[in-house]
Length: 206
Image (tube, rainbow, N blue to C red; front, side, top):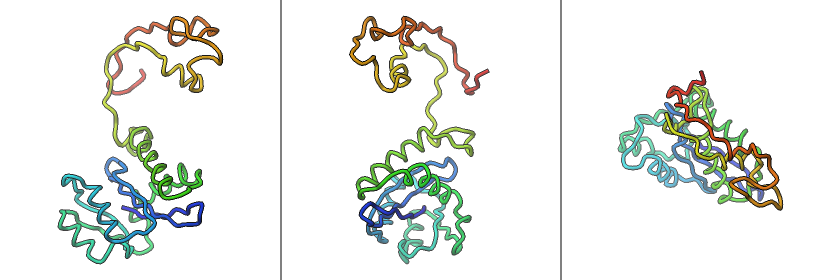
């Protein structure tokens, strides 16, 4: 668990609380507020551990915002709180690394308008980081890996064709004929009839 600050366009300071699962590096929960309190932090902990899915340990620093009785209340949920030493960010290296990634790849590239804007951007980053971003610690897997596809045919590459073409499915002012835009070469991606090759379950190319 880590608390970080973000400066908005109006010079208002916003606070972001993030929970990350150590084994899979999964961003479990995050939320934003302009006024962090012990009661708000407690609600976020409850939201991060739904239906009794509580971790064995909770690693955090000694910030007073968590409240004096936070250790006892967490223990009531079956969670043992591990407090890091003062001014020792390496004691919570995984959370600190996440904060650095979050700033470099998201927050440093944006001008945050308000709390709702920040929450929306962080929610999108959470989805990207969990589902799409490979992690070296996980052998370039994502924290929430998709189910592997072991067989099947490629029926149509229309969506891939559109992405490669910059998001447009047809040339400006053209119309589609037989599944391909008029004016495109006959060897369009959507016209390729690819054979069905079984994919290696291990994900190896050769």
